[in-house]
Image 1 (cartoon, rainbow, N blue to C red):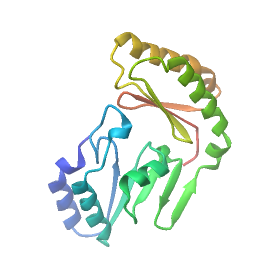
Image 2: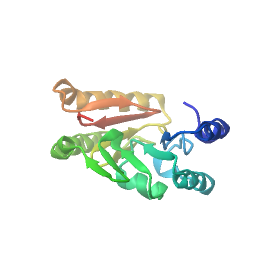
Image 3: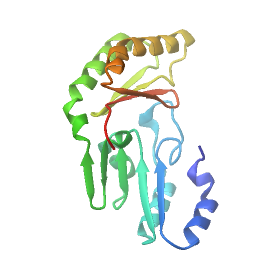
Length: 187
């Protein structure tokens, strides 16, 4: 994956080529560097101003796609006129659109149950961090220092979620030293 603003000349060339441009970008690792803890990822003022400039161009449509919750990404970016696609597509909000997957809302208790079991089982591990994002759960292990603890996080996670995966009640994906647990949905 390329860091957007290290390739800004290519983006500018594309935007000047004429026509209408849809620019969809991730937040973590693209607009901001990956951090040990997700709370430490902050959009720089320089990048915020570049994004604002893009939203003012009538030939550009800007969308930010993220695993973060809708509330969190809107607070981090704070730019009107952007399409925010949050929680891996479960929530969307932007010009003329606001949508939340109804199946995800109904199955919220499943995620809460998984969150609590993981939290109780792994909270003693130094560097472990679990995020309840409302309609998804993130299990971060980037800051876990001991190799045995990383394996313990992985093994415990798989043991807890196995019955839910087998019944297709949840989906599991893996990012950069993070596991994402969300509910199946039609996008």
